[in-house]
Length: 182
Image (cartoon, rainbow, N blue to C red; front, top):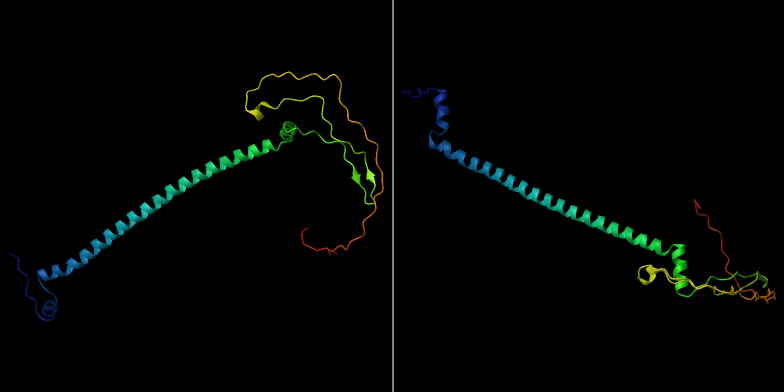
């Protein structure tokens, strides 16, 4: 059997410094446990980090869907606003409320004279039924009543009466401001 050779001199003194047998294995055990704990902690940390990232990803996806839905709703509301503010829709709703187009306007000059011929708004001879979408019923052909003679408003004579000018009041003096870019 093989037996360890005897050490002499300097080698013998160095061999006495190192423990022999089980003592060498006992010194390795804490190091191995430390490495295993570090690896296990690292893996658990990666698992927690991965879970947090995937949770954030799901939250981001939900928020993107919610943003898309809200954008679609905003666009639909904007289309409704545009449809209600179109000139023909405003005219139709004004007729439904009993409003009539105004006559020719007249203007007052700075000296108090009236410029133009004022006229009152007159009802038209034909009345159109309200639009079907305004009352929420399906469209049905409704005959329009015939008018025997057109209704005209009396034409007033132009009025040019001078108005006494009010006494001049103190007006604030405004100084022009210089704003770059305007």
